[in-house]
Amino acid sequence: MEGKRFIRNRKNLLLSIGGGVLITLLIVFIVTPIISLLFRTTPEQFLASLSNPVVWNAVVLSLITASTATIIIIGVGTPVAWINARHRYPGRELVDTLIDLPLVLPPTVAGLALLMAFGRMGLIGGFFYGFGISIAFTTLAVVIAQIFVSLPFYIRQARSSFEELDTMYENAARSLGSTPLPTFFTVIMPLVKYGLISGAIMSFARALGEFGATIMFAGNYQGRTQTMPLAIYTTMQGDLDLSITLSIILIIISFIVIALVKFKLKGHA
Amino acid sequence: MKLSYLTVIFLALLAAILFAGCTGTQVQPEKNQTVTPTANKTDLTVFAAASLTGVLNDVVKQYETLHPGVHIITNYDGSQALRTQIEQGAMADVFLSANTKQLYALRDQGIMENSSIEMFAKNKLVVIVPASNPGNITTLQDLARPGIKLVIGTKDVPIGDYARQILKKMGNDTAYGPSYNTSVLKNVISEETVVTGVVAKVQLGEADAGIVYITDVTPENRDKFTMIPIPDTYNVIAEYPLGIVKSSGNKDDAASFITYLTGDQGNATLSKYGFAPV
Image 1 (cartoon, each protein chain N blue to C red):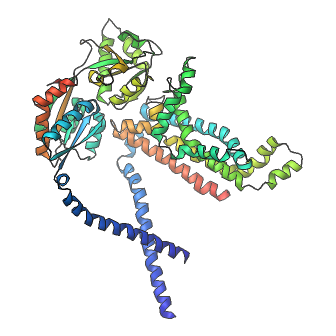
Image 2: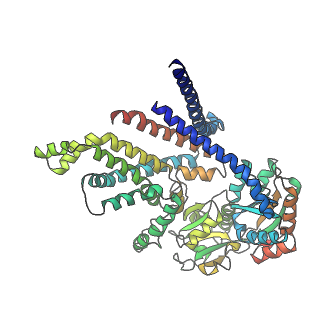
Image 3: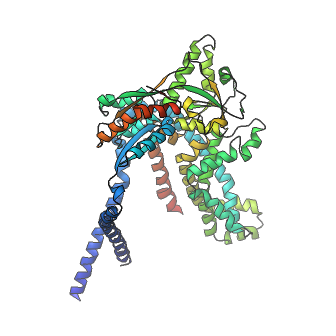
């Protein structure tokens, strides 16, 4: 008995060491590139770059477009997620699958597809162009590209939040005479708000990082369509300092986003 | 306990992968021996400005036919992007740049083999509009009309740098006036990091006009565009330099390839694609 336990303990010890080594390697693999960015600049260079119009134009544009995209996603995505969580209708599975499609679609394919649809020679874009309205290569195109790629993140999260919610809450509200819409806003929404917020933050983060679809469909123009990822790509070929500064800003934002989702919201859910 | 089992499975998988890796490398030499011709080929990596895509593919094909032992790997992009890649340690043997600025920047950092640097081709710029001409552009003056959708290169990619030089020259001429330069730049809807990006956006009809090299209009895409020539007084002569990268491990083949490109055959091919050989 004693001997067996000894062997088992030794096995466990070896496995623990193996696991520890693996985890350490993985963390080093993820953290080293991020730290390396910080080593290539100094606080002075970082601050000097911040005042460069390329940098702040990109930061402002990125924050505005990603926020707009997120607000539209919440507005459109919430009812869709609710309907798909609570109501059965023919083709619901197909709708779910199609909504998830942008998740697996390479962004370059999305960019080309958006251009074919919303470009002025495209199916939808051609119609608007008839009225003198251009969509491609405008800030609107940036927002459209961001919505396209980040919509599934919110809808998936929202739908699963709604599904986890017991129907007894809405049934109770209804039985007390509440009509569907007020029930939704005063009873259901407060109960799932942390799930929805965490979905919205994930969508926002994806929108902020959007590159491929944007550069193909919205083009690359400072202050109008050049978001932070596009500015990083462009300045890397000219002024590496600006590129690094922008990357560090994006890392900080990403870090805040993931911290919000992990620590603040998961605790409540 | 559960965790330990998972760890065991994970480690087993890892071991399997490592083991597979080992056997893979053991098998490979045998494979190479059976298909000997490919094993003896030496690789030559050529980094070239995107505007050279057509002509260089042609030259590479000719060269590889003459030198069956050499396999040429080409990497086309904006010269400024290639410069950044080489600066960051990309393995390149030869660099063909669309302007002197990007290649000389590497030379000044001691990255190029100085004695190998020479000019090999010249090019000029042209305005292209889609064949359908949605912006109704027939003259250079039209580019300044408000609402025109123009696509040019970024300030770092040679084509964007050259285009800005031309617009500046035109703005300094009383025939166009000082506001010409700013009006045209206001019409820019996208700045591309590579000339082929400009060509693509005009070809798709999404831009009303683009400023590209005359060599970008090829027999294959000729019917997709209308060209508006830029008079020599305003045009720039784009000079293409080349050189061997100092860290190259294959300088003999690199030099031999350059000799071919700058020789009679290479020059004839350059001319065929619209370049002026130097």
